[in-house]
Image (cartoon, rainbow, N blue to C red; front, side, top):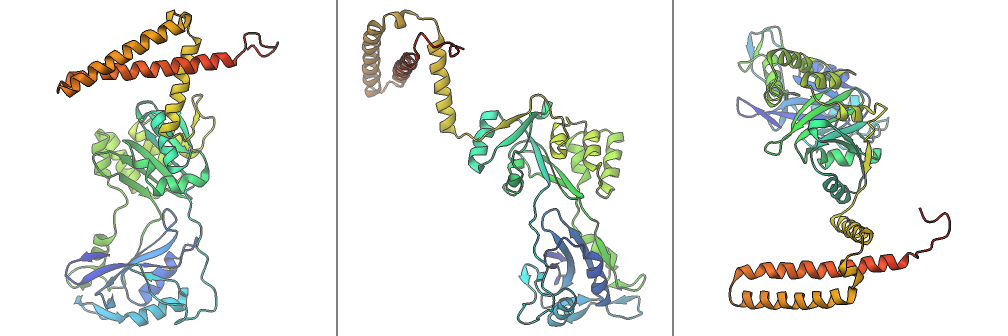
Length: 399
């Protein structure tokens, strides 16, 4: 809820049952007939449906009295009367400040409430400067794969590989886990965000405009202010242009273009114009637009946790050792094993005696001992791998 002086005036969110149908004008007309000031909007970006901000004193809904006077005070509508008027027009299932306003049993309605649409992002993409291994671990944590394209100075542009993962990527904030920029869209509405680890993401959204309901007489003051002044104070801004100008260090010409863009209603070219003004690499934009052809370096990063990546690294090391020309330790494996065991035992004894005497420098021979031991296991695994491959392969199987 939003609180505006004088104390006791609350602006509560009123939400109609979820529906793809834009009912903003109908709700605004009903509120005006009830003489209730309001800011009304229909949006499909986050929570699909029509909603409004209405004034309240906590027990009733505030309204503008129908009086021809230059200055008046708020009047009140009992909450039950307000609820009944809404239920008669829109049916049950409305919520005021998160609480169900009216129950189906108390106010039966002849037509069923519209089904709640399955809200889903049409597209989402973001940039990340993290390495592919980190992105793969992130995918393992959230159970998804990512499409990846080089994005120049921004690192890599990412999006969920499967459309069913778009909402998870958005709701769980995968787009906000690293410095960069993020884009998403649903229907005609879209949004962009720049992300910095030091601050909260700054989001600019382009959604359907607010409809302001002003039932007052021209120039009439309500508790010392015009209704439009009240509404301008409580409508939350969709965009903070000054923050974007400062973050991207725009010159005066580009700053003017960005201010004009931030005043526009959403259209097909909104995100394209944003990237042009900010002079950003367009890889992220092309992912969210799904514009073919994608870059030649397009790849799918599959989920892999740290254990899987460690196993892959060990296998690569074994393969690399197996492919090397044979040296002394391969030509004389038993002699090398004997020398290694003597050295390992000597290093282990030296490290243990040093640590017992309190010398921290004894950690170094201990580390050498561990690395040498690991190398013996790797050599043994490589030897087994080579032993499985016969020297004389049948024709067609030798590469």
